[in-house]
Length: 200
Image (cartoon, rainbow, N blue to C red; front, top):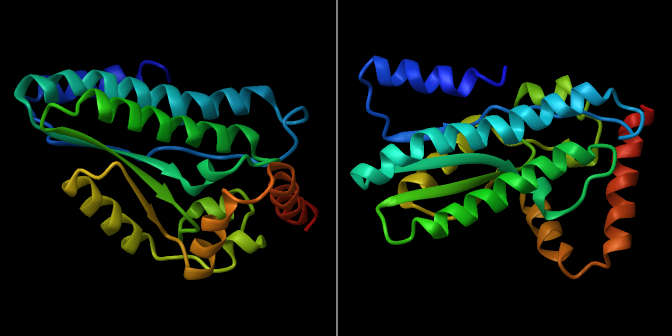
């Protein structure tokens, strides 16, 4: 529902509630070849993961700036570190969240308003089962959603730009090596991981 962000904002204003923290956590994914997936599903994903998040931030941010206080936490994903074949729109939408959050954080550098991007790893949520990711190596070991939420919340309070949470030590090592890996090799490996899941 494109009008949902405005309805939320207006209800909050009408109730006289002063929002200190805006946490944009809604989002969903999808699996399959981009050219075969129903286009309406990917457009809905863009609506929720990008348009709604952007709109809510745009609606609440002027109030934060006006009173010179307030914090935004936008939930992204460690998927931003690579391109994800068979989840092309999901990975791209989360890359938008990181770029958008970092950019407006810099725009607000001379205020007391902060914007933090939470980059989630493999976390214990319904996302794994809903999108049939439980059999992939990336989700072989997951981290408690309570730990991830706490890490994100604390990072927001500290005004950090980014925080990576829900990542095991081996996954952290793998992520640190991504920048040194040839892009074609990285794309092939991610595709093979996703393809393995698709075939099971």
